[in-house]
Length: 140
Image 1 (cartoon, helix red, strand yellow):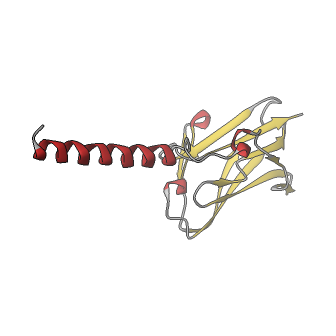
Image 2 (cartoon, rainbow, N blue to C red; image 1 turned 60 degrees about the vertical axis):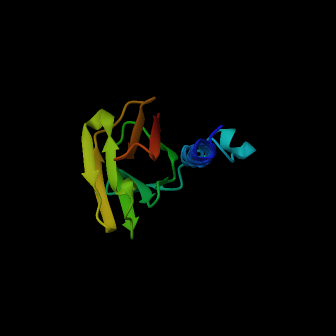
């Protein structure tokens, strides 16, 4: 085999291997711990009442925290997104079921009002690129 061809094929193999590791890490498929497959922790510590409305607070930076939460059905709800030096794609929030796309400021809080939800409703949202998501489960 020609020496130049062998070098070119070797370089291509290295590039493909490095690219494969990068893509797998980016999608979370490589270097997973056992806890990755556990059920997500549902939080309700970020939910409280203000002036007769339920407030669900979500911190936005490199994703959404908490990622999964529970809230009370049948109550008008406000999702309060809190940003602090948020530059990434999570600063664009998409809620498909509401046909909503909200661009959050670099710092501050932004409120999205929801009508009272039915018991069993699960509202999901994601960043503008679909990389990060969150869900709110409404129960009676």
